Image 1: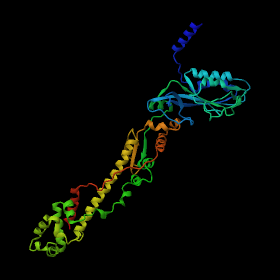
Image 2: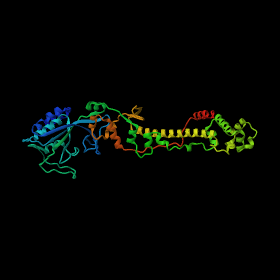
Image 3: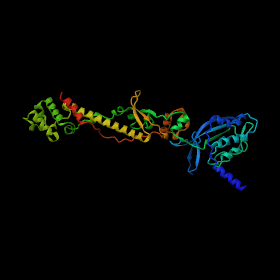
Image 4: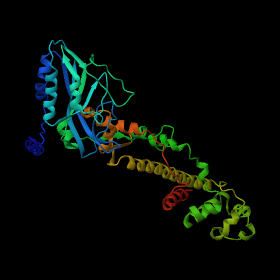
Length: 429
């Protein structure tokens, strides 16, 4: 007898695992006896995945079960297809307990595993219980569902008394033991949809990622107009003749400006009003211009305000506009660069920026990332083809942040372009 038992066990180990994906009409055939006995039976597709606990033991979790924290597998991870079977009391008049146990066990023999039995009395975890043995605790008699006992390890969970009737019935989750690869092909086959990228305006993207009280929120939504009021022109005017001549004007424009200044006051009046007037008497206009232009610190102009001449006032205004615009553009670029740096970290699969004719501003095409599905509450969202909802839900959980930007104190501009505009103005003065 012992030898025969040994060979039976050896043969059992050699027997390959049967894995059959049951269609809904096939599943219904297994449940026919329960349905015919008057019990109310419904079933729905579920999905599950292996999740590691602290003890490193593999357990199943239903991704669409509120009791568990719902997680989708990563791209290329394992996912298990199965069914939730809900059985409610009916109006039968026979004992079908054995038929119930046989039906569930036949489904298990097709390569499925019971991952949860849920009833009003007790919520079981499969790291605590032998589900096959627990089937023996339920009785289906005369349209009622009764539980023999439900003794759990955790004291905080209620215990149902022997023989109590379950008015709400029971729910049984079964998943295939053989996993499938969770990827775009699986989603296409299971839900009939291709993975879709998300298209979103910059305004909506900013609302999703940036705190509305952030200093740069309005700038990212409305552009330079939100910055314009903070850049006052008076801060960008040259403060001295020396700054004007040494840092802004070309030699050609510097001498042309002096010529225009002399033209406004006349040579005699101009030289008389200069600080070094005694050194300028008797000189020609060209000599006066060369003397002052090459003079250290332009000290001859010390008696004049930089805005005393109409021509110099016009030129300093042009310079202020250049510097102000350059500073504003530089800071706007730095703010946008900081935002795109944030996007590079958040959108790991990348994105592209394009113009949408129906939207006045940047539009983003964000490449779908399976990471977004990790926190998805319900995998059935996929069947609604709403990848945007998955995107919004993921980043909604992440919360908004404040943008970190290091702003420059000035902006770069083309000095050649500036002097071209100044020359065009002075030569007509």
